[in-house]
Length: 339
Image (cartoon, rainbow, N blue to C red; front, top):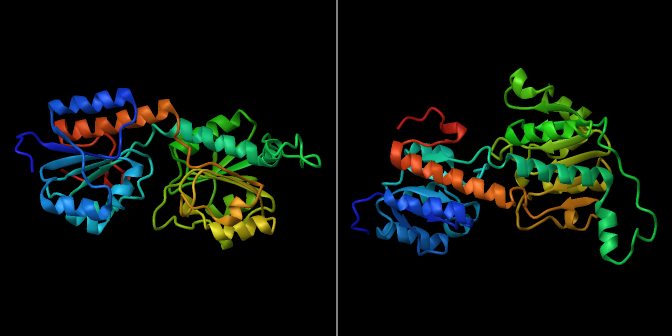
């Protein structure tokens, strides 16, 4: 355990961009910067229980730090230093963290809710255009040395005039809607709450089943939670228009992959563009073997600009926790949580 009189802050994962790294180092004026020795969940829990991490008040954690700690669940929370009051997560989605249990233990949680919007929306649009136009098959043929394949590729479809249904009209969903209007798409959405007219920006609010029944393209942009896990499964596929296109840049488990494979095989779903998977990095073999499926390996925020902005935003959460005892962007479930 440190003898420093400063509070301590823990880095779980790596800060990869120089500008953000400078911001992190600048926090040494306020706190002792700590990294764990552990490289596995079992060892991390032992390190916590040993007292080596006592005095930690806040942590910067990355998505990939789950390989060190595992999920932030009851077992882990009970092992964490009692001094820990702030978990600052470097991502928009935070399904690796049990927020209700954190709340019960007086631990505040933050995320980076808007820094990811442009890059993730752009990834969704890339997948959407590729799936609509059927670009995956000719791309695969080209790399096999067949310029246009043994026969001409099937004709795709234009986005213009198609009805886009956005499931989850948060920052990423609204960003996609704004950009896809330039392609001539009409937009409808379903959300937990109907948005204000300004935020809708011309999109039409519809009920969940109507969105499924009427959309030509469905984009999944909602967070993963116990309520949204497999929100798209066999019953929902049965409601969709034959030949629907589905895009998922949210979390893999909001859609039942086995049911998706069946819907692709029976023609209900014409094509799909995926950046996330139910059990990533594992991908359902029925998706891997289907050449109508466009796949990316969770690349939604993979730009220098976006990841730098995410890291700097997350560090600002740590700084505010140290200086003001509050977070810049607490997760919505804790918006009313008092210090």
